[in-house]
Length: 391
Image: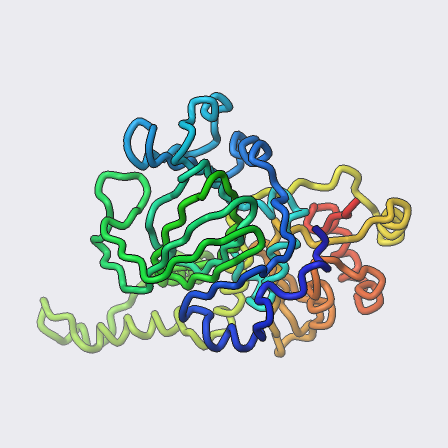
């Protein structure tokens, strides 16, 4: 399906209305969000992907396995599918847009949410009555129905942390009382904010595609920032007792000693520091998985790249397995930090915006505004596989 066939996955709703009234607030059902949608990955193709070493996959068997709600994590043995029961099981595969770049057109429909906040495109194929059980996700998600039909039950009520079925490898809710029930058919889509309970059951065989957005805990954020700011600190910098602490009771931690510690933390953990923006860009652009391969035929200059694209009648695209983001850096001559896969580069703001404008890159327009260093940078990105030709 061509990207041009989908005007907006929100139907007749304005993006601002969705962001103001629904995003991270309440569920939404959108009938025919993707009109005439046809499943781009067959069940056999999905099963084949789940057998590959680098693919994140799992099978959930509600009935007919070794025990109720058995979870099998990939990579799968090809023989496992021959042993599956006829009903009540589901195959789930993550990161589809990274290992099959042609599917990035689906996630690109959601660029009204910052692209760096996107996690992945996940697909599930379910046998009749297949399900992964009632549960909550800690991230925002759009669920697009592919082949077949799936019944979804939804609850917006708070879920206690101990409301979990014990002794299972997957977190299922012990008590689940639905408030809404929707049956999704091909092209229908629903949006669920983080923390909303949901339970999908396949009506016959069916497939679905989930566009999920990152949910990073405060613990992970703080720990990663601390690791970032301490990475290059010298071990020779040590805590020094202030004068006031030397004159206190031998067992007293004096106010002066505490203040000296506060001073150390202010020095390195200042949220107003420009270093925080640099760390955050590195953090959100790090995909944590690597599906990239260097291009088979590296190019030496832009003329060679332009000629290659012309001869092959190909477009130049940003690879969906790479994360691109940028932020202003006004105090620098090159006034922008461009982040790609956890690394940062100083470039002009015009260059960064043009590079990240769309999935498909207007190479001629990009070259016109690029400095010599930025032109060399384009070649490096192409040879590293972060930009690729859509043959």
